[in-house]
Length: 140
Image (cartoon, rainbow, N blue to C red; front, side):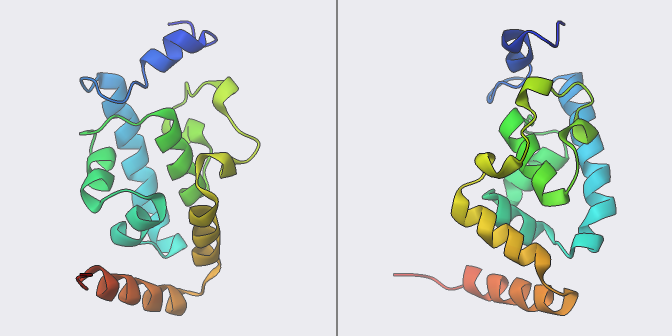
């Protein structure tokens, strides 16, 4: 594959398609990064999925290669985990690398994420408890 050809690269990142060996490799790298970074960043799967705008089920599916990671999703995870997108996909196209990933997240999500990442471990625990409580409240 010619990685400088955007059409060919985008074909490997289509949203709904069969999972390829490349997808499984990307997911495996992401899963290992997640395991090594979640404690350092004070993140749980529930908090991370909320910050990224995914359901917990989708979050799990991305980490386990059940859902293919597209460019936007890799950028979101990269920002959350403070990594280079090429850590997930060594062949991540250079033309898709942003100077800053802010454009791939809605501004309110970005502010929420940045604020959360600045919290102390104690405060992150409080926020996770609040999110858990709020997720159980039924709104009529």
